[in-house]
Image (cartoon, rainbow, N blue to C red; front, side, top):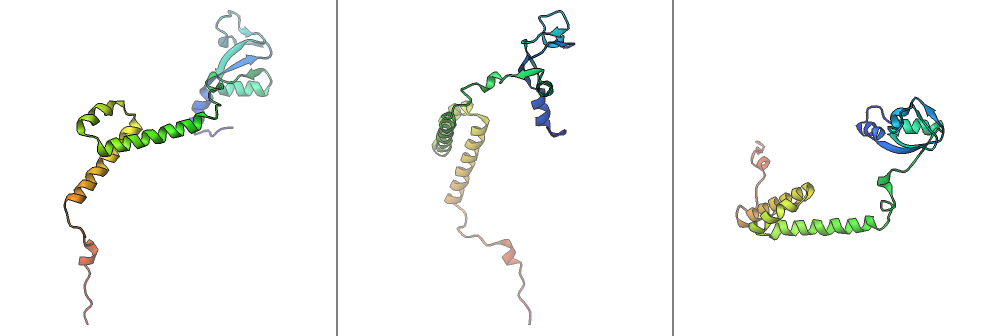
Length: 155
């Protein structure tokens, strides 16, 4: 089912998932902390590691429920396009501020940026600085260093 050496697979299998026991099980009282006996009755809902829930599901001992993080809001088809528009708009705003903002305005806005936006802002700042440096001075045409080293053939 998984790659033995893949860290993501290991972490995914340690994730707790809700499951409902279909049969009474002895020796698994650790899952039901409310009961002093060492058994879990049929119909009891508990959380268990994903790897164990999969094995018990194959043996038809439990029924795995969908975790609460995957409710109907996650399946909403309109969220994807909305987030794409929001990301594009924010991307444009960060670049515009990087190119045009005065230093005092930029200092106020920096704590509000995420790490990704901070990298984008810094890339925009370095880009505009390099452009200004190129625009203000320096030779327009530069000769490649390899061109000066060639020898003319002697006849």
